[in-house]
Image 1 (cartoon, rainbow over the protein chains, first blue to last red):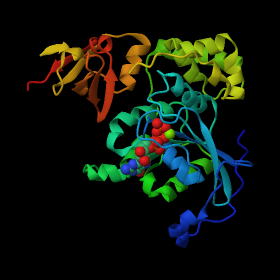
Image 2: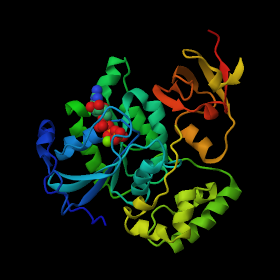
Image 3: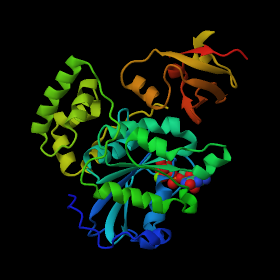
Image 4: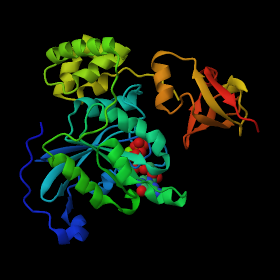
Length: 278
Length: 78
Ligand SMILES: Nc1nc2c(ncn2[C@@H]2O[C@H](COP(=O)(O)OP(=O)(O)OP(=O)(O)O)[C@@H](O)[C@H]2O)c(=O)[nH]1
Ligand SMILES: [Mg+2]
């Protein structure tokens, strides 16, 4: 799925920081022969597709209303001579209570095993958007938080302390204004850093201290791991099953969870439509 | 003053005190940013008063009356 990255072919030189964008080659719809997979996740309308377009040179539809992207789109780019496949996902508020569009994002994030998950958040609505960041950190710590719309935030008198945010979350946080192409280099560097890091980042995890719950989760997680070889997040699946997640329950009962782990696109056509809540 | 969210008029603000909803719907409301302690402002209603748009943590959310009626709030004094 994700071959070990080849060693850097260009050593990052101190003087070419200004020319970093020159190291970006947009590959359009052709992600063939990629070394690494990067997912673009985030709440609706935070600028994921705008980032996608800036990196791939494609023209995914960008719109100023929630839910513009309803399916996943793929493209490619090359940075420092390494090829990346970039996956643009529909906006989602949550990995836990999902609507049909959101299931596409959830399935890819949880079962698609991207090498790096970039969570695009809106600098003017950080408080709301960090909910999803925390949920994603429970399934992977190979995360970069891209704080987008800093231009808009500045207009509202909001400045974001990226170093502090990054320290609190345990993963890189970079600022950007994707529509103007600002911050692309910082994002690429952070993505590269996480992608090539041999060890996992110390992303912030939420711990539950209830002994009985912990025992139940461990027990069930073991069974999930045995039932679904290759699943990367058996504990997360176990916790969801204990919470009564109907989609996952069906996927397990019908043996579809295995297929999903083999090919995360599988579940897409089979999710049962839910009435959107709000 | 204690009331439920559906009873706010446009422009009124309140603080959430409790969610009288269980299961996935409770989770959903929390994921949308509505939990005890959250400040909410009623923005505008559709012509029939249902659904209504609310301002929560800087974004607009649209809720149906039967959901809003299960969100207990403390109405701020105008
Ligand atoms: N001011 C400003 N606007 C931006 C920026 N990035 C994106 N936008 C605008 O934000 C809106 C939403 O952008 P999209 O890229 O469609 O957002 P998305 O996250 O893909 O949206 P969904 O697919 O619906 O989840 C568009 O009107 C963009 O032009 C930015 O950096 N600054
Ligand atoms: Mg989009």
